[in-house]
Length: 366
Image (cartoon, rainbow, N blue to C red; front, side):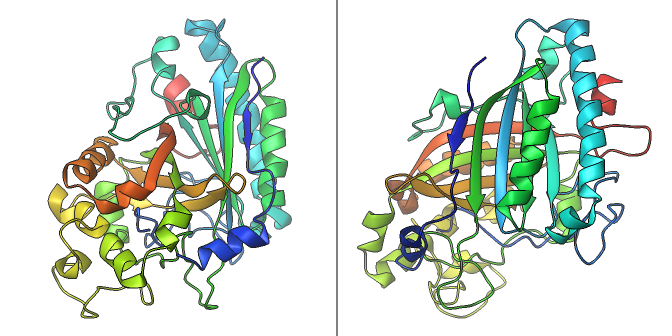
């Protein structure tokens, strides 16, 4: 049985935290959408049951853990469907019990499950229309051991202990039907100035550019499902940190101190109105996609002193939107691309939520 890549098994070191004060955009923004109204929630956390899974529009927690699993290659067709249905039933029961507990709610623990593009065909099922593999992108240097997966689980909480505990439970309950493919954890760096808005590892504030709840209904949700794009993006932190602040701001297209437009004047035309033509903000503007939006929910990662970067997580109705933006970044010669390199990638269709008598995957597997 292949072993999963064990990335980031420790908390951020002091050096990693200090790097955060040295220096992008990359769409790492605060979550503006609120939770789905059907998702039960108290003052501590969102719980589990609901028409939609928590973890997409839920306000970001301090830590994240991504788990990818593959279905045993010997399991195909109806037999594979039965095996997967049994696992998802066991996962649903375990998640309901765990996420509804006082400790998990206090940690704001959420679990979000999706299926990869290859899984439906292996089971003889019709794939959701939006679920397809991402194309190759210029500049990628993808490690196959950090890409793909038949099932993808996003675990988020305010403590890493909470995500690690439920991750161990899910892997145990997977039995021999699923085997771990890769894992990656992430964190929100503290703000060096003591502010409440986190800064990414390049030192820029997460901006307020995510879609509103109304825009989420149009661009993120498709009924009670959505799609998740995951990209593990290595950042050349030291090279970026050597640049003067004004040059960093030109590359990102935002003020480093405020996170707002470079001219300090909010505009109906958006922050890109004051940004240089080759800035990141210009390249990723929703105005170039007829207003289509994705809900970014990214984290930082640190896999040792030579590999740190962005765990890009974005929810959208159709991953074709991400592909258009990524191609435009290359065509527009987005200057931030010179400091980034995608080394891991995955896409998943996030299933509707679990309800009484309907476990996760019921719509897919019957």
